[in-house]
Image (cartoon, rainbow, N blue to C red; front, side):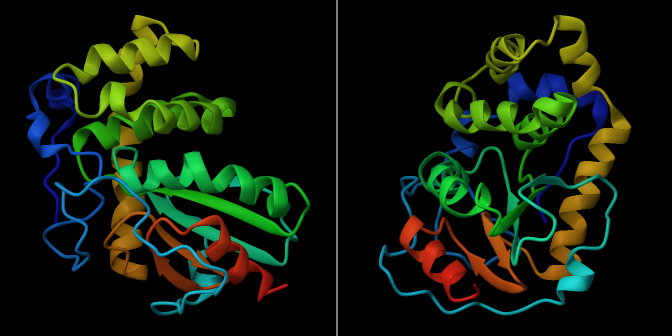
Length: 238
């Protein structure tokens, strides 16, 4: 299990946490998962691109998966879409960034915007910086997806740097945060506890160990699926 810091250390940890421990490909809980994507591996798509749908790595009960948790789900798409994707992601994960930057825009245009897919995004942070990113996205309220998009796109500007606090503040200011609202967000113990509870539920109830992990109509897939692979999975369910 990844170690966590208490509220009073979240802001200071954004400065003090060793950069060497935050490589952008660190998308695995080293205490539990068996994924071979180590922190020294470049953040490239870990799944071979192709038109064939990959085999699922297990299944979960969709009714249980969709039960409300401690935080309201962040959702793209229509409630009655025939395919539901639940993604567990970490803001400091390079593979998650790869998916959100390179795959999701096409999937959104092709399937989400056309009413065929609903996407639910849930937090699965591996470190204090990922927790901070998740908290800022949540504090952006209606701009959750816009803030998440910026944080994923600008991972190189805040994840591997010495002073992530200042880097995140610069990004947050672009999203309308002030110094006061930024610090209030990152010292919100209730929000931090709720985000940690989302992660714990994903791990304990649904076997999530690495990010990104997708549940597509209950079928489990780990890794940053390419456009072709995710399309093949979705098409098989339509």
